[in-house]
Length: 585
Image (cartoon, rainbow, N blue to C red; front, side):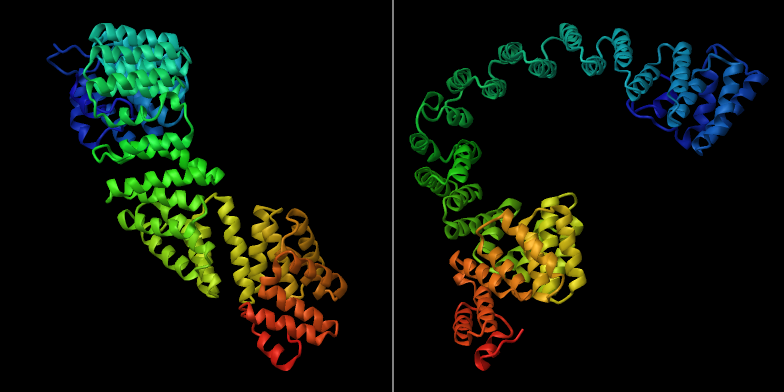
């Protein structure tokens, strides 16, 4: 191969620009291109062409394609067999996205230098770019004929045939190459994938069986076959292969785990889990295949909350904690079972232990934060979110949780900053963006930053116009301010229609009517809210007291204000209402 091509085209599948250091090599190359090697003297014409070639290459390097093109074309007029000039023109027109001319000139280069494989590869690249996969396959077919031991040519030939959906032809290419080099793992894997893609599971399995026959001592290929049988639902065939594996290696952990329990798992889940205990107690069997066995049943507990199944799972996960004390996964599995079976306090302890052993699993942090939020432990929400952000600074969810915890602690300014960070990082996660905008609106409203609050509420509704949480929150904010009460009433009604019998939504509707001085309607809705489980809500109790005061029942108002205080109200006016037996708003 010529020196220039060694330097300029060493990456066969890319469009490589020539390097500036090649100018001196170009001179020598130019004379070799299309010129007999026996030439001893250089004519004046050839010297002129040499200078043109260097001028054209200079312009090419500078990106001045429109100046380089006529120079290269002039060279080809004087020397049509100059493959180098034709190749450079092809590359220029490819860069200019003129596929027709790029193809024309690379074909001219190939005609002038038919043995140059890089020209043909570049032709295939051009075909690929233009989605001419059949033609690209033909190029590599020709290359394979010229260099029948080059495996890359066969793989690319078959690849383009697959792109044309000619699977049978691609398989024949692999068969032809296999005849030349003998059995080959890569070829068999590719043929296996093609048979799987066409739904021919019998032939797909036969290819893996050929690998096993060629390498009978390799357990890897047997595991591939067993895994394939499991994938297509042939559990009995998979078990047969796993049994064969155990005859070779009785301690193979994956085979042991796969054969755990009765054949085909013809037993109930509880008995199946009990059958796993002797295997789970073996420390030499790695943790991962054990976890794989029980994950489907952990998911089942998550869906059903089945207490009997949860109890059996806990026995196994706690056994794993003992057998693998420095592994985080058993504690995480125990935590999942506890959480989904209704024991979040114990689950939190297990999740915390998981983080002590491995703090790099984001889902564990997420679960810890959710449990703390459910427990209304807002200080822990802020603390854990802050710790997790050191590890995952770009996770929008963590910024959201930090803001939510801060907001619940009445640190709205800090919360709003976190919410804004979450919005920047949420990308196209519409669900999270909705929640962030909603909470941001509430925080701005609490700070009496009403235009910003309205903008955030509107942004939340733009993401989900039928979200009852946003409708209720926006309605309550407007009612509390005494603004746009007609819209507040419409949103409160819509929220109650979407999610009926919720005490907090009934309270909002009653509060809107109260602000509209419809005291009879307000009493009806607030009474329903109290009867519907809202009698523990200090805000509802205070609002009901306000209503009673407005209807001249001062003693009744005082009774409900005192109840609100007993339930932990943080209202700024409540103490004064009680002391002075007067209404302050």
